Structure formats: C-alpha cells, structure tokens
Length: 360
Image (tube, rainbow, N blue to C red; front, side, top):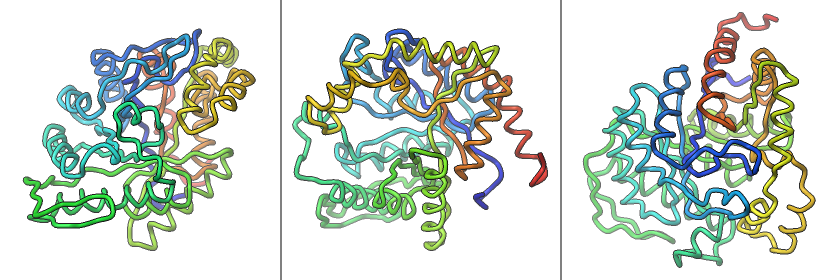
C-alpha cells in the first residue's frame, strides 16, 4: 500500500450540472442549483468528508433527460461554498484551453483567501469538442500530446505567477510580458488533475498534489497508482491518488441492487451517444454503441451497491486492492445518500484506518 498515509481522503463530486452523474430517466435528477449544492457541501462537511469538487461543463448532451443541459460555473460556485463551509477543502475546475493562466492565477488566489487556505485547482485541458466549438475556441489540430504540452506550459505559468514578482515567457501556447499577479497565494492552492495515459500520469507526477485515475480493473488501477507514486517520488514529490465511485446504498443488499437495476432501466441512450460523439467518436458509431449499451452505462463511474456493511467492505476492498489514497464519491440522490453514508459507512472506514496493520 501507499506509504504516504494510512488515512484516506473521502470527497464528494458535486452535482453542479442537472441530472448529476446518472444518465437515466428513472434515476433521481439533482438540480443545477446553488442551493442544492450548498446543502450537499454542508452535509459533506458535517459528515466528516475531506473535500468537495465541482467540474466545469459548458454544454450538455441532450436526450430525453437533457443531461447536463443546465450547469453552474465551477469557480464562482465554489467561492460561494467557501463561505458556506469552514473545514472541507474546496476544489474548483478550470479549463486551461479556455482561461488564460494570468486570469486563473488571480481567480484561485482569491478563492484561497475566501476559503482560508482550502482552495484546490482541478486542471483540465478540454476533451469535449462540442463545448468549445460553440465558442469558436476548439483547436482540432491539437492531438493528445500537444494538449498536454499546452497544459504543462499553462501550469508552469500559473506556478510562476503565484511565486514570482513578474513573469515574462514566450511559450508555444502562451505569452506573458512582465506579467504581475499579486498578492501571491499563501499557501499555494492544491493542484489536482485526472488522467490515465502515460502523458497524463507524467503530468500528475510533476505538478499535481492529487491524481484522479481510472482503469478497467482494480489490479490495473493499482499499477497506475503505483506508477504515479513512484514517478513523483523520483522527483522528490508526493502525490495522492484517487478514483471516482458511485454509491447506491439501501437498507439491505437486495434493496440497493434493485435501485441500481431500476436506474439502469432508464438509460438515456441518446444522451449517452451524444457524449461519446462529443469525445470524438464517429456519430454513427456512437449511436450504434449507445443503442446496444447495457443499463449499467447509466452510471458514469464504477459503482457499488449494498447495505452499510457491504458498502464499507467494498470500499475498503477497492482502496486496498488498487492502493489508492482516497475516493471521490457520487450519490444518485445526494441529500439522502450522503447522509446515510456519513452516519453508517464513514465511521467504519475511519475505524479501519486505526486498526493495527494486518488486523482482520
């Protein structure tokens, strides 16, 4: 297991887009409202979770559910939640292909002051073409490698703006001329990024404090987690690794399984196909795949079902097998789901951290 710490980090992926993380007509449909997200953030803090994070999304995927058709802007919303909370870490998302590094440096310095040092910057480089074509800023000439060169250059610029009196740089993608960004944040905001490619993991090891990973199996996830930890260690750094997990909790295992099956029955295939098309799939291929997709595709992440004891057992299995430092949790219905998790599952997980190594 990771030698960074036995204590795991648990956070919540906030539903700042309508429908949350379920692409389904038969699942709960969280609203894209500040009031709802404020309730979720406060519940997460009250439960003892460690962070809340909001994505950045600029266009939805249509379908019967109008999935993510309504969204709240991440950085602005998280500034409000920084005032609405006291302890939980506040992680907002910024698109480096959309926001100039000088703008982002100033925004997150401000968020760091509002939050009293709890701010985090989730850096993404834009992979859904539809979002940016509508604004006229999608650069189809940039391949995967080029996007990561851009992201690294952008991050270097932000880090310099956070620490140097002025910055002058003439890069491949960004130009700064005697650029000032004061005051500097103290401490510097946490940097988070998601990725599973070799280039993505290299970026995480070099720049990130938290790395979100995805894989087809727990064993593959373990290999990715080890790789990020090892790469970071060779650079004298520490990076905590995370993955996402949707929790479907019931009074019994059978009840939770029935809920998950019901959510899958309402899979919005049109929205699912539009999502894949926006990733770059051929439209006909995306439509054909979505029409044949299984109901479990209504979940955008891996998921677990069960009563409190089963959920705790499965979460610990994921963390221990994949050698992760934490999880970002999703709930089909956040207010009830997060409350139940905080009251019945999280205490078991925290107790497991205190148990002697090797104890059953």
